[in-house]
Image (cartoon, rainbow, N blue to C red):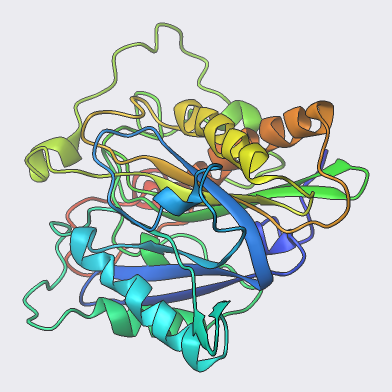
Amino acid sequence: MQPGPRNSLTDIPGLQVGQAEDARLKSGVTVVMGAAPFVASVAVMGGAPGTRETDLLEPDKSAPAIDALVLSGGSAFGLDSAGGVVARLREMGRGFAVGPVRVPIVPAAIIFDLLNGGDKDWTDSPYPALGRAAVDAMGKEVRLGSHGAGTGALTARMKGGTGSASLEIGNGITVAALMIANPIGSPCTRGDRHFWAAPFELGAEFGGLGPDPASGLVTPEESLKYGALSRHANTTIGVVATNARLTKAQAKRLATASHDGIARAVVPAHSPADGDLIFAAATGEGRPADDAMLGAICNAAAHCVARSIARAVFEATPAPGDILRCWSDLNGRV
């Protein structure tokens, strides 16, 4: 297996990503959209999720496909970004046809970034406009680190951000992930240098430092974020995708299995104060994947999730008003 040409979610044919952010707000929005509606599902394993329209992604619900997925900062306020995306897609003629009306189907999830040092003194929510801007910025480039929904993301001891990774697994099948790393836990072992996800790194996509040679890596260091945010909710969210054809039930299994990647990259993961959530998307045509292929896709997706989280942290950049430092500030560029 090897990364796709971009090593990002947009290695999946038909998928594009749009990102928009506000540097003063220290927050932003990321939108994933297909050339056509696509099959999707979701799995939530954190204790404090914030979502919109995720119920219809369950296999027993009637919506056969969706138009876009939204990842946003802003906690509950950030869910307004999906309204901006829906409005923009309606203007574009996208959406589920109901007689003469088209209704865009746009599930969304948010991270908590309200206490990250940004200017939150606004009256009218900035998130609908950020959602619109993200749609208008749609393309194949995925900016890593402090961009899009990951602009103001934080981890236990350093800045988080946006990360992405892909794998070509053979037979023309590609699997990829795009993650917003904002966990209460840490992406690094003690010393804040080696990534928990290091065993799954390909090349030097997040520094090439390898696994921590120490043993007894059981008790994490004190979380600087936990004290600074007074135990408020956090969250790692993202999208995994494949160009294989999956049923909605298979997409649900993919979303569930992909959470293994969060557990490989963040310690602790899936805490009561996290709203960890992963959407799964499938854009393929032809026959649905058999069990063997689905297992291979799930395995690759978990690897991509872990790598994406580490890349998000590795690529984060400093900005005025930050309350935590970046991995690069602590370790230098390698």
